[in-house]
Length: 206
Image (cartoon, rainbow, N blue to C red; front, side, top):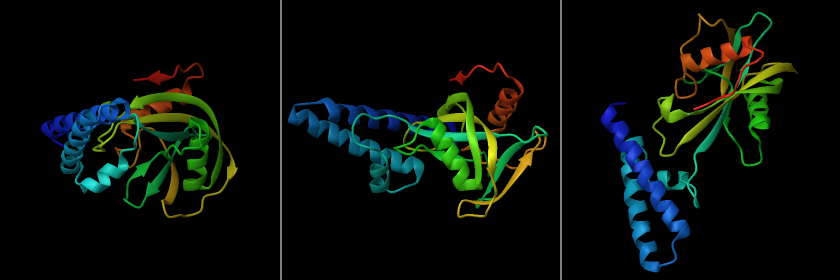
């Protein structure tokens, strides 16, 4: 994505957030009309940046005060110190994970996503990092995303192919496959390896 397009995307996201906040708190009907018009314009701008219909973008943006979406990624290591990754239908690889559901905590969501995508039972042990995807991942979503990396330990279970995952495999740090960089980058995988090796790891937040 070109730098100019990224700037326009960021501006449209901020404009939409400001309009949505105004709609939540304003009391004057004329101000509400103005905020609704600004929000509609921002949604149109976003739809051109993320290549999606304006109606779809509008539905993705929740009502009320605008907040980023949350995503969990589970880092699971075997006895040889290799990290578990899932092979997606796109042909790329990622740490198991996904959007945080309404009734889940960060830990329980990480555990749930691992079970759904890999068939494995895990325990959430430590929080490795919380990262703003705008600073780390090549995302073009019309909203902000915070990514939570959770160090997990395997407790049982077996892999079975499903609609999201065609294969799971453990990889060494210097032999990573082609990554789905919207989900995890080589730098983020390296961070997970560092956290696994360090029993005194301090959670990163940035």
